[in-house]
Length: 556
Ligand code: NAP
Figure (tube, rainbow, N blue to C red):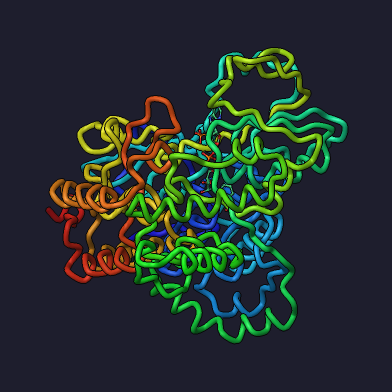
């Protein structure tokens, strides 16, 4: 297999010239947690790899989401790479839940420590990818006018990178400052003395609102659906805690990889309905106090599958909101009703509910008085006009599929990924979509991704993809594609498992319902990362069952 030296920049070819020798072995799209690790692994195989990143620096989600309060809601020790014991020993987390700047520093450290930057091209967006069926090569086109040929493509484009533009009439007419949490100015924003509107109360809004309220003269939150938020109980990590963490890292990393969701705990075995009120309340209180995102889900085994069991925990959270928020009307407005706990992603907060006790913070219940439109001076609801200086859109993402269908990907027979996924994403094991050979996805749709600790899920995908590419090269094969039958089976299996839970009935980004016109499909695998890992490993061990592997055209 010809190989360009990793630090050598290949010269572009004309799109019309059909090469039989690729300029690169692999192109990785995106330089976040996924892309950096994929680069590291593929370079270990001796491949020529180029990472192409649209942003002006590495870091992916942690580069872009710089809104005040942005921090991870999985514990830092857990939400970090496990592939390098040395990295574990040398990096020191300062807080239980790392802030966005600290996570970004970590990713920069990783890029420097492993010499990754030389193979990353920044400020360049992949706009098109076309598969050459004869040569088993992808032609990659970028917005800088470059065209590259490569054998393999890895979409490391992230689950939450396609920002959902505000679907509110008049948004462009606003004469104040409009900001999106996922595209926060790097230089920061001074909100002192400003009247700030926040639209959206998902995890981004919940993290941002308390900090916005510390600065702004007035904060008005426009809430369409109330959220379930648990206190993070974040705190600095002491030197002793870091030392203890480092001592147990080797065992901890193994346990993480074997776990159901990438965090280590004993899965519950009892139904919430088997317990009496006092026992349940005690269990939920412990979950609430744990400061863990899954603290309440760890209590009983049927919270996400049984509506009555779920209602017990939902009511527990509402009771907590009533305790924290002093005005009963505001507490009720902030209390989710008719929304099963956990079916929209819960949030970890620091002072979210208590912020509404401040006299300059208020909430507008859009379920009663919907937004009519955005005006030059603010936001108009069915009840009244709200004049503001700044609107913060915390309105989320075209999750899971948005970053992939944004690229014009043309597979076998000239079919585009957009066409193929018109009714929802289709692939085998969340890894390859039939008809789009050698195009792998890291933590994309129909894999455990967003239902697990993302970094653990990323490492599992990257390692499977790397082993797969190594196998192809060792066997002198140049193409892997998912079979249509295996794909059909996998999509049905994912849908069947999701159908056993309360998730699919709820309009959320998990189901694609947050984006107008997006097909309604449950987008993640609910069976657990451990079972998923076992299935992926079994397929590979069984000669890549469910996939077709092909030799180069001149060997056929
Ligand atoms: P999100 O969960 O999709 O929340 C978007 C919010 O905007 C919702 O409250 C939504 O209301 C509201 N909204 C959207 N369009 C609206 C409109 N036209 N009018 C009024 N309200 C509107 O987005 P997100 O908060 O950015 O979070 C997305 C995901 O990113 C999270 O679930 C999580 O997985 C990840 N995330 C993680 C962290 C972390 O680790 N700490 C932090 C932030 C985000 P409806 O609910 O009614 O649609």
